[in-house]
Image 1: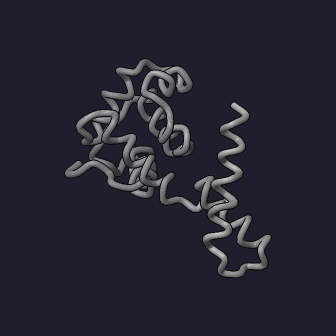
Image 2: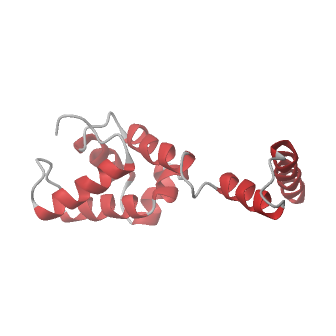
Length: 130
């Protein structure tokens, strides 16, 4: 592999190619399973620490580090960046969904500041409850 996958879509293609044997990257069954699960759950991969993620996946943290390096990344943090960028730019982003919901409640008008302030107010209230 020349360069590490830069997007979640590239990682998905890599999973497909490894599975079909058409990739120059070879992974053992456990590493392949781990990668497939990460690709299926990008939110989990984006926000978890390496230790927490390893526990949830039933592997050692070193497995995630080795997998990252095998795919061409400098380490786990570099691979995790792919998932973070995907989630941050995703339509599934929590804050984007909230603004969309509030915009639709306001009849789709362009009262962006009002909607933004309502989201901020709601989140402040949620934080105060903690």
